[in-house]
Image (cartoon, rainbow, N blue to C red; front, side, top):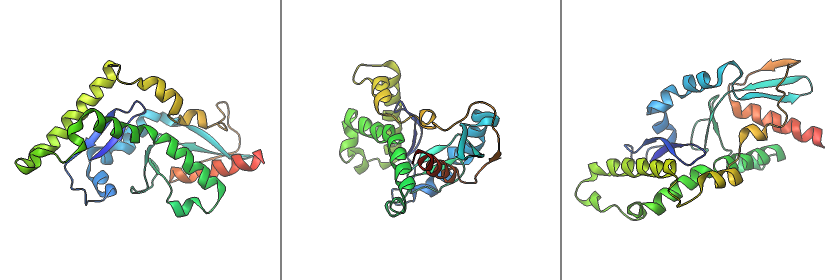
Length: 209
């Protein structure tokens, strides 16, 4: 199952058609969201995107809206991936940025945990696989819809908003070096947004000493 999750742990897009042996990046590129996400995020962000990050005393970068994914996906302008373990050991900014990414991805891990705990049929081999394997994607899609419905209705099983406020990493709050006023100096854009975030993290650490 490949899924797109929001900070409230709702499944915004799922794909259950592919075998588990198929790579995540290939699945994403063949999904509708994989083909249109860049244009949709640019439209949502407008000309200023998610904001501007200072990466030097006289330099800032424009950050677009993006999807956060794990390292199995392809890193790009609109898809920011976590770092491999070996990469986090090369310097402090990379390690810190990866920890920030881990916080941002918390709702994703939690969404899958809630889904499996509430719908126990997913916690063990699905019985219908023996007789009707074609129906399994429909089952998974159905419980995902019910999962979203329960969250939207606030059924009391868990306080999604309160937990999100405490645990979910908010990128807007993390961009402490963003200048919302007039920007002086050169403005750049990276072909890979993760590079911009890493430059900003390094600059932030340098001025904090």
